[in-house]
Amino acid sequence: QSALTQPASLSGSPGQSITISCSGSSSDVGSYNYVSWYQQYPGKAPKLIIYDVTNRPSGVSGRFSGSKSGNTASLTISGLQVEDEADYYCTSYSRGDTLVLFGGGTKLTVL
Amino acid sequence: EVQLVESGGGWVQPGGSLRLSCAASGFTFSDYSMNWVRQAPGKGLEWVSYISFSSNTIQYADSVKGRFTISRDTAKNALSLQMNNLREEDTAVYYCARVVNRWLLAAAGMDYWGQGILVTVSS
Image (tube, rainbow over all chains, first blue to last red; front, top):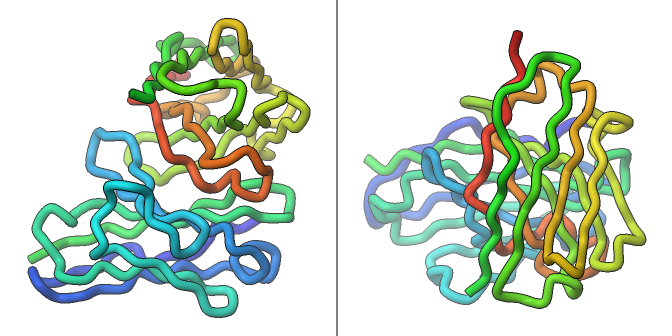
C-alpha cells in the first residue's frame, strides 16, 4: 500500500504563508476525517500539530491550520517564523492493509 | 506530566531478537491505545504496530507482521514490542506514542511520543 504523497521540500520567507499538501486515496484521506500532521526537528521526536483534519492540540500555535478536499489534505502555516523550519509529516487512518499511513515528509526551509 | 520512556534498544545481528519497552506515566494508561512508530536513519516515519486500550485490537505493518509482537501490561503501565528475526532494514529509531483517543479510526493521531530508542541490526 502506497504511502501518502507530500512534496519533498518547500521554502518560504518569514511572514509568508505556505501550504503543504498530502495526497491519498478514497481508502484513507478521502473517506475519513482522521488526518494528522506532525512537526519534527532533527534528532527529536515528532510533535502533533493537527489531528482529525482540523483540530489543534492545546498549546499549538494558531498559525497552524488543517483542511481537506477530496483525497488531499493540507497543512497551512501562516506568518512563517524561522522556528517553523522543520520536517512535516501527514498521517491518515486507512481501511487498507496498513492501519496508519505516513506521508514521506516535507522539509520546510524558512529563508 | 505525560511521559513515555523507551528502553531495550541496541545492536543485534541479523536474525536476532530484541524486546523494546515503553514506560508510561502521568496518565491512565489503560484508557489509551498505543502505537509503535519507527524512523530509519535519514528517512521518514513509518507506522509499525497498534494496540488498543483493551488489547482487543492489534495490528501490524506488513513489513513486520509475523516477526514483531506488541503487548501491554496495564499493571505495570508498560508497552512492549518483541522483535524477532530482525533484518538490517529494521534498523531505526523506535518511538512509542499515545493515540489521542481510544478508537481504532483515530490511530493516526498521536499526542505524546517517547524520546525514541535506536535499534541497529548489522553483522
